[in-house]
Image (cartoon, rainbow, N blue to C red; front, side, top):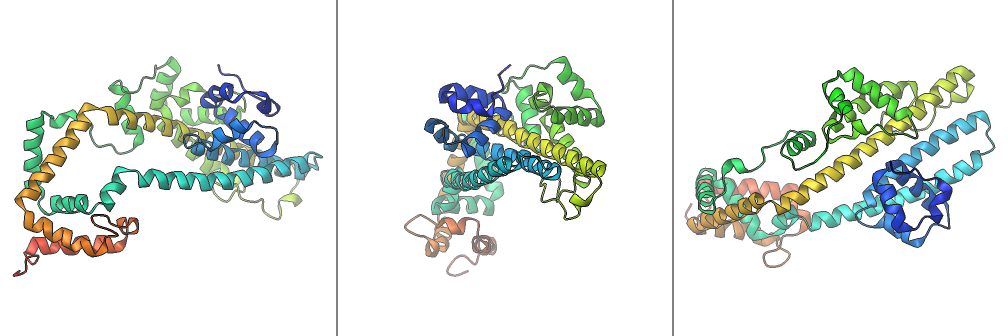
Length: 374
């Protein structure tokens, strides 16, 4: 079991030794995020680590979790006149400053990822866009060419993955085919077969335990049921916690501090539990993100995926060769929007004008009005 680190320890742990501690335990990452926000003695290497591309989203989630923990702590201290309130409020303010910084960095990361994505390259490349519209205009012909190319290359139709309704179905498929290795304990098998109420009770116990973690809930095959349980627990707790939503604590209502102590204590306890549920949902998101990243990396190396892409490119080229006039027409329709030869602006990729232009082009191809004499 990976050890739990304390806030005061963070500045003394070398960054290289810190990595496995925060990789395997999300609560350790939360501790490091708080320490980095409030202490001036955390090593610069640790500060830089949290801001690296591969850690930014985890860092942001950890700060969101720390925000919730510290907020409910300040609420309780304010109600009980705890002398530690000023120190805790300072920590909360510093965490929120870091949370804003992390949000900006994550947005930059997502934009960078999009700019380098296949979807962006296809969307801003006039030729790839024209080929895509041509495939839409001649679907049956393209399907026949694709089958021919698949046969030529030796790509079987059933060799690829099926369509998935959600990420959990994809994870289940990957586990069944050995692409994700996750041994199943008796407790995992028991929860997989259990009623929803049992899973909710297990998830609630896990959220209440600040120190421990139920490994069974974090098994890939149980992530979907765990998330459903957390969502339901959040929905039923939000009212008792006087929260804005199951996903956001919000501020306590003005009349809270006039409540009798037993009732106020019940609200504070509910808010603490809701903050713990929100932390677990962030932890759940981290596990899903790690698994989907592993599956994406595997897909990039999958010979079937590479061969299927080759077959698609070959079929598209054959379709262009069969319809050179139509292809030239689509390119001419896109040309006025190009930033430079063959390159469309990023702003056009998801704009209403692009969708409208595509409808116009496809309609002209369908009724024959695309030709000068049409």
